[in-house]
Amino acid sequence: MRFSARLKPARLLRRYKRFLADVELADGQVLTAVCPNTGSMLGCCEPGSPVWLSESDSPTRKYRHTWEMVQVGRVRIGINTGLPNRLVEEAVTRGVIAELGGYTTLRREVPFGAERSRVDLLLRADGRPDCYVEVKNVTAAVSAGVALFPDAVSARGTKHLRELIRLVADGRRAVLVYCVQRADVREVRPADAIDPLYGRTLREALAAGVEVLAYGARVTTREIVLERPLAVCCP
Image (tube, rainbow, N blue to C red):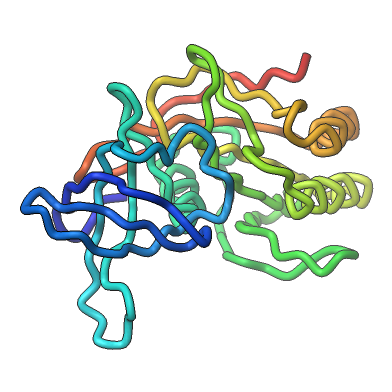
């Protein structure tokens, strides 16, 4: 996914009210940007961190800038949770996610399930079971090469796992894809210390036949591209 215009560099002053962030531009101007991430952003919102912003020309937006990525150490991390579905869709159509190849149609945000959910992607092909793909954004990494999900208690994430388990029981294919918007990760693990219920339900999903994949991204100020498979570890 290529950004339509070059991102604007800034320095993070603070993130607050979940959806807002104050930043300082190179010329000293301070502005408020939209923070498109409702999670805790564990390890990704330290004051003083270099950040990059996109800018909208919409006359109806109260805040013109959107916080897109942050640098932690030497690593750039995409924090916009509105992008992972698009990143995974692009990776599927380019053949990067080999496990999801061979389907002829793709639909987005399709209602399904007993708990009134919407699956991120629905893949179909003649002679194959429908494939329901749930996408989760991963940004937190608490040790070298190891990313964690979720970064806060996620009742919604647990609900989606229950829905995927039901799909498999009904003879459909259910796939969870962790979209890791950083380049320094080799594996993804459930954050049991943060949300033990999610961790237990993830293991139940794996045992029930839900497929769990993880793919890592190359993150630059011009584009974010999923390009490599990662291990999923549930010890």
